[in-house]
Length: 113
Length: 109
Image (cartoon, rainbow over all chains, first blue to last red):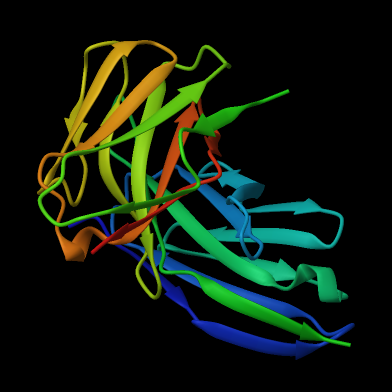
């Protein structure tokens, strides 16, 4: 079935360290992989996304990598800052024609000063 | 600026009541979604709609129905609220990127 697994569920790092969150998906036809950040009490917001024709995408301190063969993708945050503390969700598209997103269960990232 | 709004931030209802949650978007998006968010379970899709009067079941539709009479408005209906429907409900709309509303925290007593 349609499934996205996300690990770890919680991640604690020191300010300045790197953080990596990993997701796997079940459908080899998935072709769109967004990452959302949800700060406490706020709505999820898109921070970066990648399509299946690209292996890596970077935006300042954030990067996403995609391995289609292994059906996994990862979020990398470098030089973490306390304001990076939030819950991060990965998602993968499923379906042909109209595509819906299936979300991972989330990773709570805590960046300590 | 992108805007998705939801009718209530907090709602308290009693078991058996009929509950309406409303979502409005001003981006002329075709697609709209209702999710529920529970700790440790992420965002789970209840229903979605890709056009006016069109609706599709998501992964957890039981106990819910939806209505999309106008393009900008997508309503989630709990026909007879139960305590296991206590949750955070998030609406989203999209062309491709999904934009979320602020959420409605529903408590069913």
